[in-house]
Amino acid sequence: MDLRKIKKLIELVEESGISELEVKSGEEAVRIVRSGATQPAAVTQPTTKAAEPAVAVPSARATIKAPMSGTFYRSPEPGAAPYISVGDEVASGAVVCIIESMKMMNEITALEGGRCVEILVMDGEPITTGQALIRIG
Image (tube, rainbow, N blue to C red; front, side):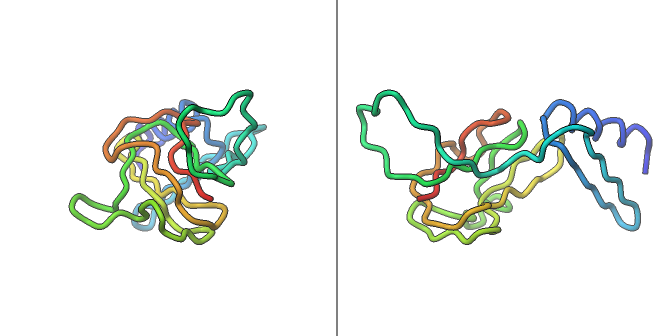
């Protein structure tokens, strides 16, 4: 693998805050692990809010958050059906979206099963690390 590509991957790991990245291309593979970092959780429990919002929001047990910055996509390719829609049952480990970061497509999976109650970002929208993407109820 080209040394410049490896350096770019290291920069991606540092900038995104992820703790581990593995890339395979043909017979070549590289795995980058940040020492001392904890594994980022794609699904976290929502925190308690001091005041309730004025608009009623569906009840959610978990929120899927972006583990990296990039562009959010709901489907595997343009024109294809989205991975999930509001109201769909989501199984633990199921792919729920893709984040394109540094020209690499990263599948984001649900760590907890449930029903999709809200999709918080639009298809093709730029997102940041830690941004809430999908609420699971």
